[in-house]
Image 1 (cartoon, rainbow, N blue to C red):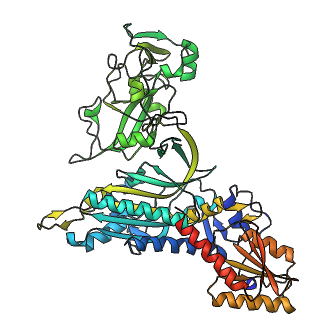
Image 2: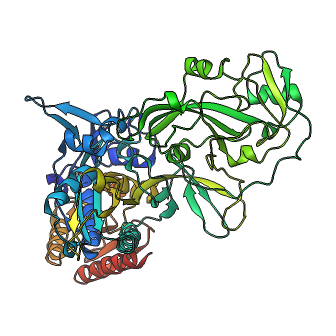
Image 3: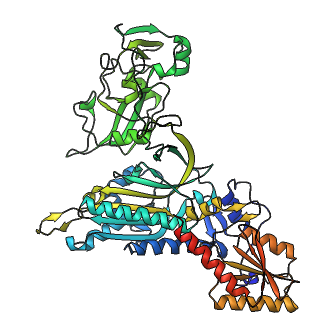
Length: 597
């Protein structure tokens, strides 16, 4: 391609809203333009790089036997009602109604669509295992889209779905996907961390995320420096802490604490550390699947017919005073579609006191959920369910017994690894890919069955696997850039070589055209800068766009200068030998990316 025939559209400066490197450089290098808040259009150079990422993903999916399909972006709402996610997915899901009154979903993910397709085609165990995938547009109505395509409203994802007769088969496919992910991210030039993760609104059991380190990452990664344990903070577990203090024989005592509400205020008032308190927070759970019929306050809860979920239930969650509740862990423990802190009015109705005075002792209006850290406390302090009153000398097990106990704390740097006991450290990261073992969650809801070898009808189990294509491309730029611009790995660069004649006329033009033709004959992706611009402008643009190799035709003819964008190394080659030399550099670089795992 000749530069005069494409849209480089480079910018000297990026808009002020572009605060991360990939967003700034994608705009400045002419890769994309903003059409609306969270909505971006790719220009020709950006689309070429984007297609390279898609191709790498397709090659790795095809290599493990996944079959590409193309579901629609608009999905019938009744499929989402069947799965139960019509009401639980939240405001991020864009719902529309067509002219005949049919409810539709602008697909934020495709478990329902893929499983409905498989339901209509699957008949026998002989068809299993079956894996399908798509590269398709998604839409999530983000409240605050930011960082360009790193978190936009419309984006492209690779979604894959596998269907199995048993756990062993699912485990094998899960591991094949994990290996394929490592290969494809390495081919893109990305350094990824694999971390244990929460399954969130997708559901399921085992799940892992493939993360890249980022100072503006949405996720906090909890990492062990010794044994390699890695998880995001929604999933990370900790070694159990030693019991706090010694059991007391003193009876629970109610004391006056005027105008003292927060843990910090109470610590100062009683002259003890925050970790000696039992912090109690009231949470509202949506679509809770626990059986609460025998729980405190459970008899009055409304439940869906035939043993279904509770659309709304409240819980008192107890935690050591210096720690925070992990809402993802809490939702998983409660088997809930989501959890949120109760409003002030609900807190007062449930506890009989203003916010700040809740405690588990004597609370019988809602079930009490205790984190393990709260149960390890002795001689603790907590709210007394009265304004300006607290309890001291509280002993878990003696003064209150929780309905449910588990790990609902948020892990942080300094906590101890559950595998080896070493202290954790933390990093920020962005998720590029996620793999889940879903079990029969969706196949049961959508009534997918097959006949086994004995002619009996069975429900298959399922895995799901996703990669954000746009986010992967942006992450390549985040990892590969310098002050001058993008430094593309050869595998995803929009072009592999840019040919820059110092002047596009006379002998330099003839040499540049000849080299361009020979490189194209060798199937090298070459861009010829045939613009009538100063050499400095051409060089600046080639560095900004980040083409991996630059070949300059100038005063040194018949020799040309070959420069590597990544290292700045240069060499002179005779114009007749230059095409073979360039092709060799490209082949070596691509081979190195393929083995980088």
